[in-house]
Length: 183
Ligand SMILES: [Fe+2]
Image (tube, rainbow, N blue to C red):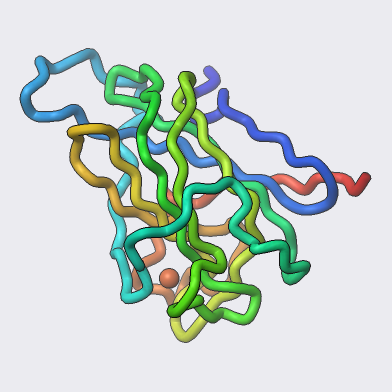
């Protein structure tokens, strides 16, 4: 049976990769419990924030600042509640390393946030991050709906040989990844 995580697909135009993540958020404590999703829709695991988060990222879809560096990546998905319903106007904040494994610690390159649409969907145009130190390839996210708890998490890339040496690696957070044909 197809899970709700598989239902959300984002198509990229042009060459590059695309990936999907559906963040399932816990219910605010004041709400009555609702029927849980199927097992594949357990709440998205939290992960370490790390040292490179910076508040105040710009609201945007394309976080590349127009630089033609690295492998283009369209990463997107959805935000769902535990009842599997999409959450509109949830904030999704992304930050990641560049194709040399460096974070922009003074500007906003490869940083951005956006709000989910009426279907809970979000997508960023970015690049594939390089691994650094002991870290495998990953992208950081913070996800929060209005009045809800903050989910800080990371996503990882399939087939990355760095998983074994990365103490923060979580196989539950590996992105489905597909390659798009050039146009
Ligand atoms: Fe990181």
